[in-house]
Length: 119
Image (cartoon, rainbow, N blue to C red; front, side):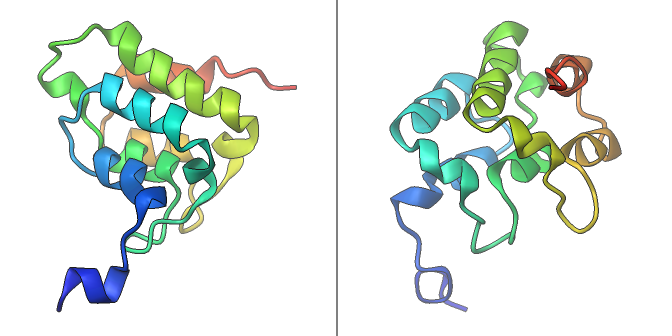
């Protein structure tokens, strides 16, 4: 199956692609969030999920840790600041925190969800 024909990638999905690669640096994800802020609300044509769901299940930058944990936290806080309701959006019946816990994401990743403002 030809990826370009079936998925029809465009710039709105660069964030999705970056988050699906486990070791993409948080600084690149942060840049994509700043350049394409509306991509947070776009469903990925490949995974049929929002970027937050992809981040929770595929992004494992803590494996190599050449940047600090605070950069990972900063990226997630930027996502939550852009769309605070994102933590309540379900994918296949599961919240982002459920997805993160199911694959064993680190505490530095999960704590952003736990400490999110519950207005």
